[in-house]
Length: 89
Image (cartoon, rainbow, N blue to C red; front, top):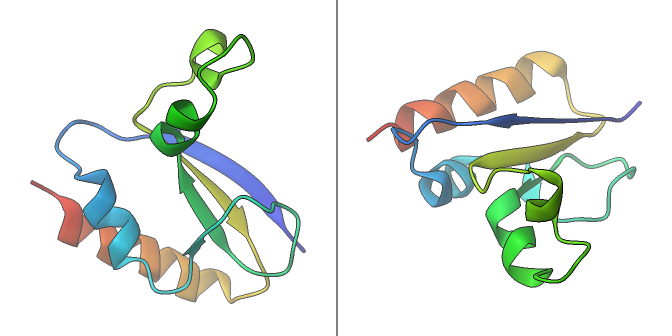
């Protein structure tokens, strides 16, 4: 029932505003559960500065990672769309 995906956003998107505007996705890193979660890669990059950091593997700080839970697909897409509208600079 869950899936994991990520994408990189352009500079015209304010990532903290985007994440704060989400209603169904909560900030979290416990992937694979039943709830929808989001984590901006920049937060992970700042927490893991060593050899195993995501930056070492080419992950951009403008990447946003999502875990999709059990909510309706239509609700989740609408949530992402409204968050993008609010976060566009």
